[in-house]
Length: 336
Ligand code: GLY
Image (spheres, protein in one colour):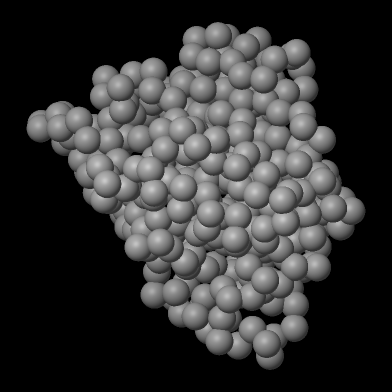
């Protein structure tokens, strides 16, 4: 997090009680009862939230809002973990994953899609225009092109240079970033460069939607798919309860059906914060003996606007946007 942003979060946390309409670190998880609200993962979630907020504020649907929000990091040339500037796989191919879901249970996703700049919008078309939930690889690309999405070369010179740096050693150690330290800094060849945009929104009527989009782990095996396009793993939303999304090592999130787990824990009465903590603890209990540096973070939004966030490692930031403030950014609490 930049110093300015960290200062902002700290200041807001300290001054929350005195600032009506502002949610903040301690209270973002407890505030509740405030709608509409948009939350998303990582520092780049601030800009995504703001785009989503504009849609919601003009009377757009939560689905329109989350799609608009997800398209922001997908288009960001500095973002090497989402969309067109994402780092490629081991073979130098950029493959993207995305999912979208509304609180009625409608959902769509694409996995390992190439040459299409906005996988979140293709995921929405899958949801709305097909009887299916998930299209993958070349089939997803063909579907997108048939629907009018332009076929593009997405690998940026910077991403290609980073891949060529990695090729010099070709160490296959895909891992998830726990500090978000490389966002916008483009450290060539650094494999610790992965995070995901997960975004959840609730409107004034308590209707929810969520979106999740990523280029996955840098230098992954071609064809590797993480949690982000898997409904119930990287994203789950239910109007009766709330929504959840995840970031970090997708394999661990898939193993625990992570976002579904968070929502089901909320259904059983946990707060969003308690639900995120329990989901992280399950991963820690089962997996941390073999992977001490593993990172997974969950972000949850209750149907009443209550927010929860928790990660295994320090460094997971999340952005909160509502009528009081559109650029709030917080550090999640963590197990380590
Ligand atoms: N969390 C995204 C991925 O593992 O691909």
